[in-house]
Length: 135
Image (cartoon, rainbow, N blue to C red; front, side, top):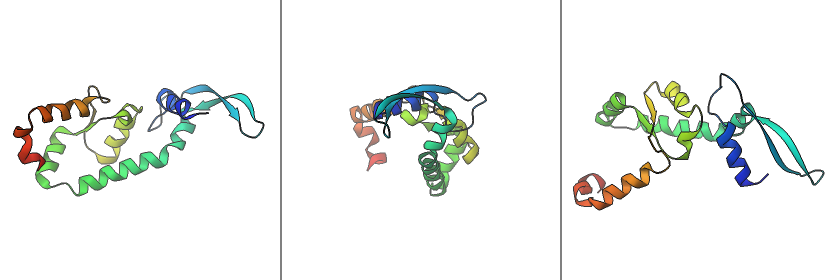
């Protein structure tokens, strides 16, 4: 299967933690051994296993960042929690997994795919207000 198909499957049935009801999907691709088109059934369990290393790396990076966070910022994170942004925030159960790993509140941003770029745009429009924080 191609990269686009893999991304679509990840979005449709991928998950960061065990689901109450696991999901299956049919995928089409070329059998590399027989060199013919083929359809197989793949489960959310298999996708979770396939992306486990990447999820572990992200979780480890979050934990390391939290360890290195200054106390005053850590207090804010404890009060407000972690906000997930980007496409990874849409992975089913990723917020729950991080909540379990960190024991902190974890929220998915309202529009995770565009919130960072929109926030950056607001900062650039008013850069003089944020200069002390940025530099």
